[in-house]
Length: 481
Ligand code: NAD
Image (cartoon, rainbow, N blue to C red; front, side):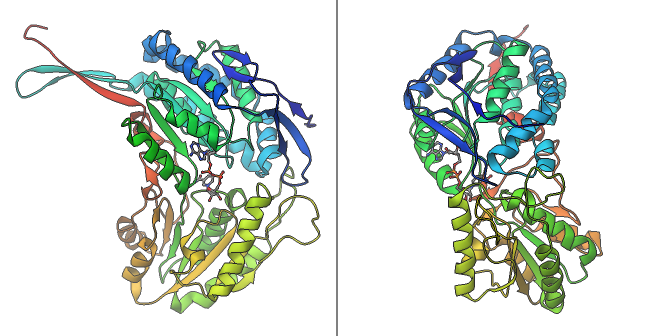
């Protein structure tokens, strides 16, 4: 597919592209070569107000919350079909915007989540008659109302972790993509128009944190579901406290790949490397800490260093590329400064360790392995958001590994490896993270996903992901009804 620059106008509000209130524009830059791949209007708080107004009206007066779950499921399926037809285009736009390797972009559109929640809708107990202590009641699962969905730039599927569940619940929505990655959502808007989603059910205004905060502060928005940094999540949660606004947060991580002393390294290390370099290391679930028993530490460091050091880094449009560029100069400089921080704390660079040489355009960080890291160093505690892996030795058995894995303000993801799966499972049970895989690095949209501690609140995926967009209503029934 040849890529044509896309210069788009307006915001998708109330079922159509509406003219922006500002004449300023935001250019979208391809991270591999800094070419401008498109532009969109710069949004203002007024644009966001218009979106929230449309969503509120659609919830209070429109058909969507009053359609049957089966009708909503049908609509989700039609959206999935519409997006699937344009998968190549979507993947291309994703890679153009954020440098995600094209192979991954194709798998990261989240279309399967539309199909999953369409299936869930048909079987879900939306309304149940239940016997209480003094009589019968009707327990109803009703939509939470207008949901503001705020997503970062690192993966298109992050919006699909929210939108299908919100829609199937009967919510209306305002979607706020990052200013760095707005282009693919115009394509989504086209599909929503094609399939005839009622106006105002999905409104899309890409914008910066000021525009996002305006959405958070709008009292007509009942729920905010946010994915991004812990710092922004803290601010959003505090802002919602005043009106007891509902909130789900999917935040950062500093997840551990825990190698027990009998770990099968031939499986564990390639999977750990893939998990830590996923999406150029820009993934909240990245396995950015590797905990290795002292007895096998040298072997782990040498093997990981050799593997990571020989990873192909290159053009994200190349089908064979596993690591592409990072998003922008800010992300690159942040990663490089963390590598320097690590060195100053006593870490030893055994692979990578700097900008990719011979690239004068684009934003490149070598996949990097830091050895001799201790768990109290900043590189072991803070989210770097690039392919920078800290390898940390532990002594004194599995409990020491558990304590080290849990010694983090985050609790999102992880993996634990042993030749004895039962032993690994015993360790997994003690890890305070929302997801952890025994002898693998697996994610399954049919099962709940989310964070402990400062990695977030609430769950996406699975039935729990739908609960995030529901309010329970109990109607106490008189005798005879
Ligand atoms: P961010 O948290 O600042 O922004 C994420 C999204 O939230 C963007 O759409 C942004 O415009 C919006 N936003 C920010 N502040 C807001 C506010 N107060 N109210 C409403 N919306 C707001 O993330 P970033 O600036 O894109 O990246 C900074 C760091 O965040 C990264 O280096 C990384 O560590 C982390 N991050 C984590 C994830 C994740 O999936 N956990 C994703 C992206 C970034």
